[in-house]
Image 1 (cartoon, helix red, strand yellow):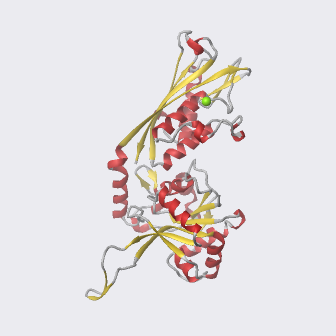
Image 2 (cartoon, rainbow, N blue to C red; image 1 turned 45 degrees about the horizontal axis):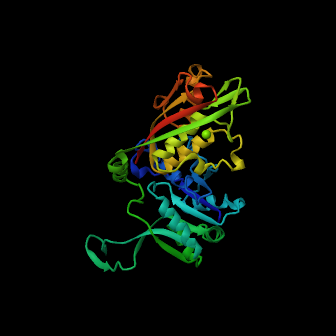
Image 3 (tube, protein in one colour; image 1 turned 180 degrees about the vertical axis):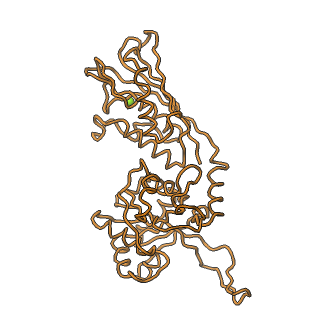
Amino acid sequence: MPKSVALVVAAGRGHRAGGEIPKQYMTLAGRPLLRRTVAAFAGHGEIDTVRVVINPDDRALYDAAVAGLTLLEPVAGGAERQDSVRNGLESLVEHGLDNVLIHDAARPFVTADLISRTLAALDHGPGAIAAVPLSDTLKRGDGMITETIPRDGLWRAQTPQAFHYDAILAAHRDAAGLSLTDDAAVAERAGLAVTLVPGGEDNFKVTTPEDFERAQRMLTEGAATEARVGTGFDAHRFGAGDHVMLCGARIAHDRGLVGHSDADVGIHAIVDALLGAIGAGDIGDHFPPADPRWAGADSTVFLAHARDLVERAGGVIGNVDVTLICERPRVGPHRAAMIACLAEVLAIAPDRVNVKATTTERLGFTGRGEGIAAQAVATVRIG
Ligand code: MG
C-alpha cells in the first residue's frame, strides 16, 4: 500500500464568510467546519494520517475544533496559500511519503469516494485533481459582453488535489515566490501531467454567508434528519484476576474477565451498537481477536475508533444506553465514573449516555456467576 497523507490547508483568515472568527472554525450544524473536513480524511482507509496547516494565532480554535481526532501536529502557514502548502509539504519530508492530497479546509463535503478516485488516478501519473465540467456559458465583458468563450473542455478546479509527494515538493520549491492559484498550476508549471477527476457540485468551497446557509441546509434537511439505531450484545467469562473493566471503570473484584483485550464487556456492546447504526459490521471486523496488537488492549481505543467511523459516515451520536447483566460486582457505585468515561471518549454530553445494571435472578450463566453480559443500543443521526 502506498503511504498517503492528507494536507488540509486552514491558514487563511476567511473573513468573507462574515463571522467573528475565521470561517474554518465556525460551527456548521453543531460542529466546526474544519472538523468535518478533517474527519473525512482521518477516517479514510487509504489515508495514513492528516496534517493541518494553520495560522498560529488560531491554535486554541484549532485544538478545540479537532479534539479527539488523531492527527499530526499542525504546522504554521505562510503569507499566501502557496506558502502555506509549501510549508506543509516541507514538514512532511521525514515521513517517507508516496502521495499527498492537498485539500481546502473550506470544502467539508468531500466524499470518501472522491478521495479514493483522486488517489487511484495517481497510479497512472504524478498528479490528479477533483474538478467539475463547466455547465454555464462564459462571457467576457465589463458591463457589456465583448466575447463569448467556448466552454468545451473547461473545468472548474476543486480539491482534493493529489500528487506524488516528491514531484509536488520539488515543483513547489521551484515555484516559491510566484503567485499561482492552485497546486495543479504549480504542478503544470513543472511539466507534471495532472489528471482531471470528476468531483461534485456538493464539494463546493464554503466562502460567503450564502455558502454557509447552503451548507447548513444540506446538513440539516433531508438526510440529516434520518435517525439510525444499532444494537450490541457481548459476554465475557470470569477467570483469575483481581479486577474487572466495565464501561471504562476499573472495579476491584475477586475475579477478572477473560478476553483478548481488557474484556470490557460494556464497551464492546456499545461499539457493536454504534457500528450497527452505521452499517459497519461488528467489533471483530475492525479489531480481529487474532491480531496481537489488541492483546490486553484498553477497550476505549475500540470505542474511539467507532466514534471516528460514525463521524466519517457523516453521523452524530444521539445517545447510547447500555445494560450490564451480572450478580456481582455491584455496578451502582461506579455508574457516574462509567458515564463520565463513555461521554468523554464519545465526545457527547453525559446526559446522552445511560448505564443500567440488572441481575438475572440467579438464572443462567450470569446468574450462576460464570460471567458478565452486556447489551447496548445506540442512535446516530446521519447528516
Ligand atoms: Mg467482547
